[in-house]
Figure 1 (cartoon, rainbow, N blue to C red):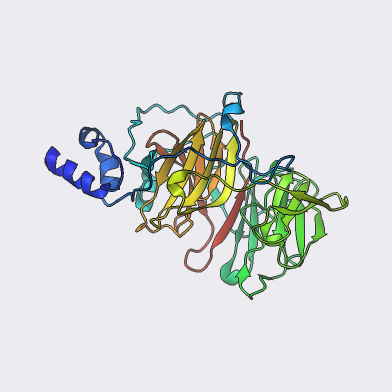
Figure 2 (cartoon, rainbow, N blue to C red):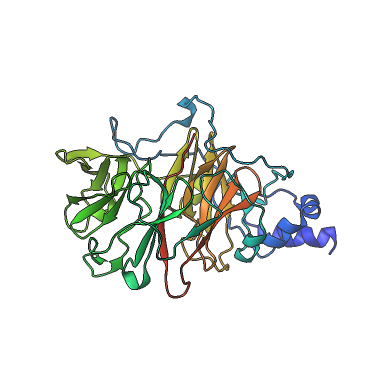
Amino acid sequence: MTTDRLRDLLHDQVSDVTTHDLSAAAWRHGQRIRRRRGIAVVGGTAAAALAVTVGVSVLDEPAGRPADLSTTTPAPTPGPTAEPDPRPTSSEPDARYAGAPVWVGPRPGEEADLPRLVGTGLPEEIDLSSGAPTAAGIGRAVGVLGVWPDGDLSRVVAVGADGSSYAVPVEGVLERVADAGGNVGSALTSESLSPGGRRAFFVQERSLEVYDFATGEWTSIATPPFLAEGAIWLTDSEIWVPESLGALSGTSYGVNGSEPVPSMVKSLGLAWPGAADGEPFGPLRSSSRAMAQSHFLSDGRDAVVAVVGKEPQVLVFDARSERWKGCCPVVGWAASGTVLFESRQEDARVLAWRVGSGDVRQVSRIIGWVAGQESYVASWSLPTG
């Protein structure tokens, strides 16, 4: 293929966005070009001021007030030590979307051949098989994954700080969860694991059932009907439940049995102008001045949007791939500006993206479940800087 022909193809693919001339970079990085050959990143509006609202915290100020990242002065502190990257990787983006640089992620079939990133706090394999030893007394978990065929949690597995799998004893504690419309959901949500990993909550119709990994004990917290689905942790011992799904006002419940307290949160997610017609999903994960969250883009693609300092950067996934819809919720941060996210598919994995480059690596493979017969839901709590 000639340089001119390749330039024409790339131009057609990203004709609605402001792009760089990628022909020279394409010859230097043939593998990346092969991955993105079928991708057309749909353009958005011109870049505007970035509006970011940070994580979950009790409000002392009006709900929804945007956080000013420029006032956060500490430099990013690495979390778990990860191996340095020995390979030179181009920082040249594949395209731009509303002013933000865009890199195209690998396709599912390429993930097994990606180089591995270690030192993240997660093991190379996360085993969801039944028969694991009990999670009682492990102290804390870095991940909790629930396997659920047909709407019932058949087993719940915690990933300990040692990387081993442990069984959470949910039998006889949890009932099938259905909303007011009768739709069955998972008792485990992406927000279930507490920030420090000591506890995990499970949603019930009129309560939250909370498991303590240090003691192995369960605590039941009564909640209004059908609202616990929106629960989030404020601290390792305090859970917030909205007054209605999607509301910013609600009630804080202490796991220690303290009196419930009305409170508000600012948890609008990570907003950036290029995704104005899309929506964020999954947890917003922060580390010092960095934050990341997954997004549905307006063209139907899934993406991970990361902000380091002030500039948003985007890793986008092929809409025609074998990943599930909502494929790539953010897991957490590793060292050196590297964000971890799930690749939810039949051969599920946790991957790592070095923000500001096209460098994507594999971290963990999720095994011990039967694709096509079972699904899983995961919640994570990794150490951050």
